[in-house]
Image (tube, rainbow, N blue to C red; front, side, top):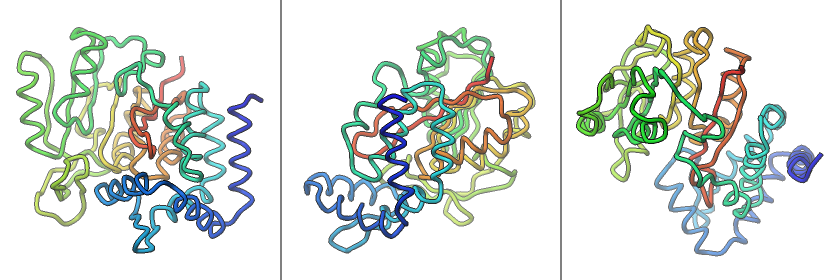
Length: 311
């Protein structure tokens, strides 16, 4: 056992020794002890991006903290499972840093875990080369991931790229950004676990905070990748604001048959850190797992799970 293992298992033992109410009250106490400027940043962030629950000390509202503590207790064994699944200590250190941030507001470990060497989704230690890719970008925005793909592996690395986004203006910008590139298919559709329609509620502050549901102002077609793409897929990237589990269920057959590399955002829901890896492993046990942080300094956001087929 090394220092990372020791810290992780000590933290897990601390979680296991307490009930949810104990964890909740202790975490609130630690939060209240933070500098006011840090608390202001966090409360503003959770107000803007409402994936994790609200947080407002003046209103005695600590919903975000309660939700974290519930996940820590309800998924303790799953966190151990995931930690032991990881292929490297960068991933294990990051998982420890996430849980320690949730529980103890440790920003130092979280900052040390940030990957500054490589572009988002393309850690060259995990994906050293890509060739003849049928790359599916779910939540493509205006093509920043496609741009990074081509930058890191050249314009000759792919046979076809499929881009999906629920915001029509993003799709139009992406098309304009890649006018001189062939075989990039752009679809203004939601990717989910069934074909049909969803409704988009746009966030005025940021499209990354858009929400989908059964009601809303904008009606968008919803598809599954299993039905929408018939050819073999080599890589799937997903960043769809918390709907990643549904989209993965909708491409279960591709995961089973094609063994695509999976690059999945797992930070929009606290339980996704473990539930998405468990879902993939249930579909196909032949994957290796890595975790990378691409930006969260005060709270773990921009966290990507890499599921890479075993050789």
